[in-house]
Image 1 (cartoon, one colour):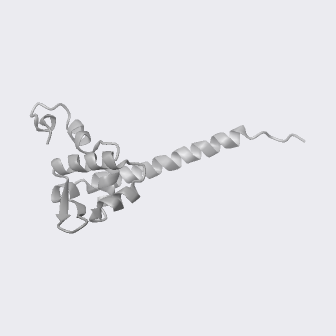
Image 2 (cartoon, one colour):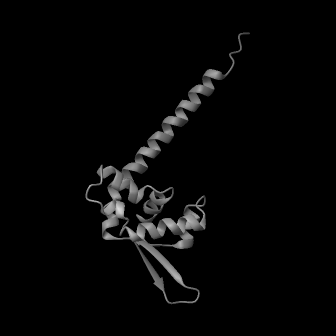
Image 3 (cartoon, helix red, strand yellow):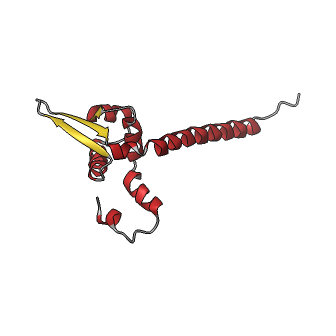
Length: 126
């Protein structure tokens, strides 16, 4: 964990939470791992916009924070699997609520866009 997360004088607990799960792809990684163990390339396929470098960095940070575990198999080529720790599983209700909120928001935005498009459609007055 970073010094900031260990600081007993840390301001708001929401800041600590966002520090742990608030990377660009961390939420998606955690959401994907709710379904179980995944290999690195599986995560890359599930999160195609994440570069290999950023995904690797964020996986390391999540591992360092005790949220995920990384298991390396002594094979050639090496196989690496990621899964949520017991502590990481405690994020499940938060991640599920975030997913539900995101879906609701997406539908709201799509509805607003359709409404605007309907308002912009010229009316034939013939």
